Length: 102
Image (tube, rainbow, N blue to C red; front, side, top):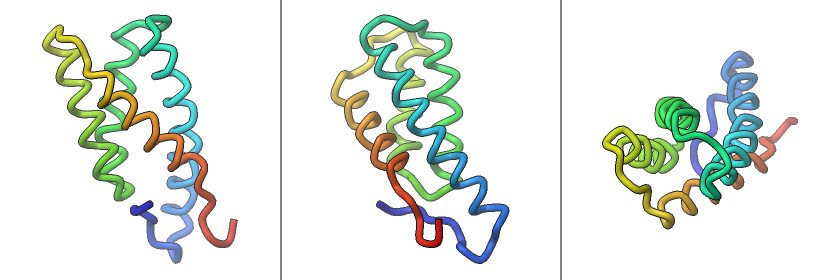
């Protein structure tokens, strides 16, 4: 996976660890949402945050997929299940990563 922050910066390392943990939480929520068990408003909020944070930590694909899904929700459209699945796979993979030294 790409997107590892500068290992020499302890603040960025802590933020990256929080982001990875948050990826697993967001993936779990988005799975519930995808099954119709969680509100679109909450999904849109989480997708918006992922779109910004993903890019901040070098995960451009997370940003791209989250932003695309957020836009569809904003327009009242029906999200593409394949895009949701890709984002879920990315979040799960990132969340499972343990950088060197942890």
